[in-house]
Image (cartoon, rainbow, N blue to C red; front, side):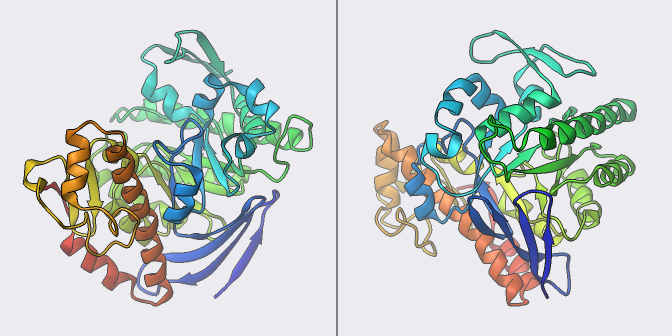
Length: 389
């Protein structure tokens, strides 16, 4: 089964296979910097780098698309430098697709004192304390200078709360900002300051844990019309059952003919549930965040390689993994690197984790193609332990 959907931008999406028992599906997204298959995991390169890894490392791990962050790149190095290099791709020497987050989550997570108005958000930079103002229009301009293949609208990401009015207010301003963002984005695509005239724009569905608000946000966001759609405001403090309900009920309602992006969810178990709900794209900082702290994701669960019990362990991190780290180094050596405060330790465990996440989602993709996703999902859940060992 194949269905093509050419959007208003340079992005093309086709659904290539659909699971008979769940909403899981495979697809292919084509962008100005190449194509990638879905479901896909996007390593997070917030500041123009996936921490500790080079672009070659990422390619060797199998990464097909990475994520950058609008807010962080705006603060450092700044748009003047990015423009000098004609975009993020040449600046960081990455030739494959890039998606940029809008910075809405960073405004929520990094700034205690912020002022949200109809025009935008005022807050202080986490880097140097200077006052920053971001509007839906400016966020579009920043992302066009960055030249990402997929840009996100600027949204208001509310904190986890049972205050339905607070969440509705957030939903309403996000929708008004979305309309402004789309108009400004379209008006500037052919301009000299845009480093990727084929850049796609995704809308973001908000609504917190209120399914009625999620459905309303989805319907009104689709009415505006975007090249793809994301579920935002997940895994920011709500309980697991609420997140699961959004996966199960809202994700399948997103337009079938457009890419579906679950923003920021963080574990392999989350990916399985998201894919079962029909999601196509995932990102998370966990592979490198855990890797820098000496914790590895494996097919059986989490391993804290710093633990003393691995001091003489000759096994690789994961006997089922064929990455560079697992085919060359023992747990004992990796523990030694952390114990000796050697930089190579965080790099190698981060490398393994990125490889694990990218190829885990690739394995999900293959199971869907072979009509055995439910079996794959069940088997992985039964053997994977999130408790650290």
